Length: 311
Image 1 (cartoon, rainbow, N blue to C red):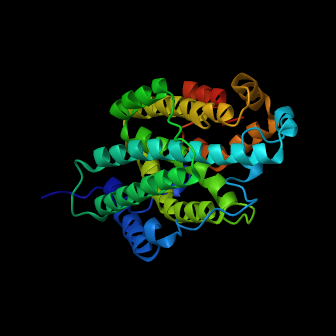
Image 2 (image 1 turned 90 degrees about the vertical axis):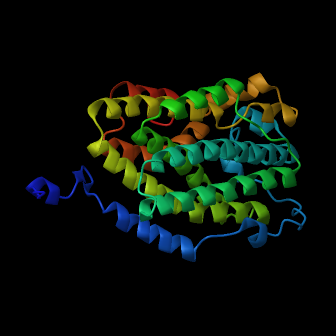
Image 3 (image 1 turned 120 degrees about the horizontal axis):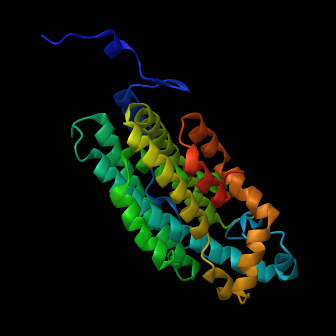
């Protein structure tokens, strides 16, 4: 006969309090998915022409905003840069979501197939498939090239997703989702922005809110229950992921596409106090959470600082 110990009955806790039951969290997320999931092919009017004089991305979120180079650019050139940066961010989103789908499949490989936890992971994978197709269609509709991440980081991601720990996978998930989510929450209500772009960001924000909840709850659980070596490796891999993500956030090729000197543009973005504040603000909610649950420690924290996402 199995004896139930006092420890078995004690809820798992971390610095944020007791963790919720994994199955209950998944059940609620499944209910939300049933109520608030979208088919971008039907929800959005892909045949409507773009509106004259509207932006493809809020100007304050364009990488060169408020730099000397920005002040020399014409309004037309600024709007053209915003169009290419929107495509660059969509390309980054596709790259990241393909990685995320692989990490989620790995996570559930050994889990009970009838559990709500696994069922929600499969639901999220379906969401991410639709998002990637939506982003690709948005790029094509916008008339720009896709902007893949540099080959070095494309291949480095092969290594990271192969050796990633389970908590490392969920930490990387949050890194890719929360900063873009912060920007998209500014974009979708902004009437200066193209209606199609606002529709794309609205769908993504609504559905990603569930993904963030799932990843946060599981990362908290993993950082309490995983062995010490796995937690330490997670801190390092998460810090390196932050560094890579910040480097790849906007492909420098966008500057050449609008007739700017690439080296000058990259240098001014790096020197921009406004851009630094935008990136740190976008990461602020995430870094506070990661700090609370013990991810931002040791060498990993130094990597986060070198990424520019943490002060």
